[in-house]
Amino acid sequence: MSLTLHLPDEAATASLAARLARLARAGDAVLLEGPLGAGKSAFARAFLRAASGDPALEVPSPTFTLVQSYDLPAGPAFHFDLWRLNGPSGIAELGWEEAREGIVLVEWPDRLGDLRPADALVITLAPGGTDEQRIATLTGWDGRLKELAA
Image: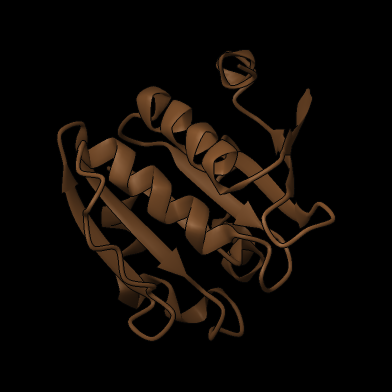
């Protein structure tokens, strides 16, 4: 089952991230796929701000640190950016197993290899025509996916 959403602007992308933040719970994995500039980091930032209840929450890109952790009302969340990894060999050192007890958001999930969670929600973002437009294709979370269609 999949769902394709046309997101006309950054506000629509943030709205989708906020709906997802309301549904996410400990143990969930959200895998963010798409080319450079597709909006993966912006989506993760909007998700974390909505989940924290703080629209001004500082959410730095984990491009260089590889992972950032957040204490959210629903429990811990971890934002991974695996762009700089060649594969899953260094992921254990980042605390992957411990992070899986909370919510994980993963940019460049192809680097997870065999560690890729089978029960994850996969969000593939693609440019939609203008700088702000996106096309989001969501797969997984069969029981909750329809709640993201608003």
